Amino acid sequence: MIKLYRFPPLDRLPSASPFCVKVEAYLRMAVIEYEPRDMTDPRKAPKGKLPFIRDGDTVVADSAAIIDYLKSRYGDPLDKDMTAAEQATALAYRRMMEEHTYFCIVQMRWMRDDTWSQVKTRYFSSMPAPLRWFVPGMARKQVRRDLRGQGIARHTDAEINAKALEDVRAISNFLGDKAYLMGAAPTSLDAMGYGFLTSLLWAPFNLPIQTEVDELDNLAAYCERLDRKYFADA
Ligand SMILES: N[C@@H](CCC(=O)N[C@@H](CS)C(=O)NCC(=O)O)C(=O)O
View 1: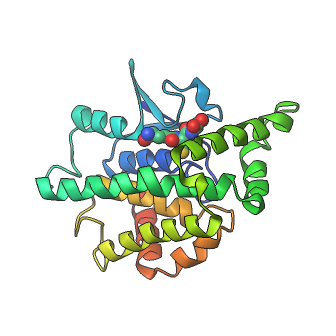
View 2 (view 1 turned 90 degrees about the vertical axis):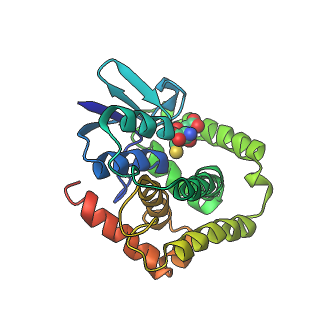
C-alpha cells in the first residue's frame, strides 16, 4: 500500500502542512488506499520537504508530482473530463495558493511573535531535550531567511493579512454557490482548496485572518462539506 509521509496532524487537520493535507485529500477523493507515516524532520525527505510517497519501489516527492504520478498509475477519476480552459483556470488558482497564499500562511504562523509561541509548542514540544531547546530557534531563523528571500517578509503583518485575504476572497467569489471549485463535480483543485483553506480556518493559532475567512460563509461550508464527505472516518 502507498505510504504517505507527512507532518503530523494538528487538531482537526490531518497534517500541519497544507501540501500534506492536499495529497491526503487527493488520495481520499480518488479512492486510493494509503497509510500515513508521520515525520517531523523534512531533511530526511528526498527533496528536503514534505509530503512524499512511497509506492512499492517508487518514491515521489512534491505534491504536484505525486498527484501526476497517481493519475498516471491509478487513473484520473477527478480531472479527466476537464476542458483545456478549465485546466488553465485550475492551474492559475493552484499557483496562487501554492506560490502566494502559502507564504502568507507560513509568515503568519512563524513570524508573528504572538502566534510563534503557540506554533513552537505545537510543532516542537514532542522533541526530546536538549533538541527542543535549540531546534525551534534554528528552524525559525531558516524560515525567516526563506521568507525574506521569497519576498513576503518584507511586508508588514497588516499588509500580509490583506494580501492573503485578497486570495481567499477570490476563491470565495470563484466558488460562489457551486458545490466544488470547478462546478458540480469534485476535481483535484478541491484537494488543494481543502488543504489550504482548512489550514487557515482550523489551525489552532488564533490567526487574525481566521475570523475574516470564517465570515465567508461559502468557504466554511465548503470545507465542512468536503470534510464530511472524505474525512468522516479520520
Ligand atoms: N512544492 C512542494 C512544497 C512542499 C512544502 O513546502 N512543504 C513544507 C511544509 S508545508 C516543508 O516541508 N517545509 C520544510 C522545510 O522547508 O524545511 C510540494 O508541493 O510538495
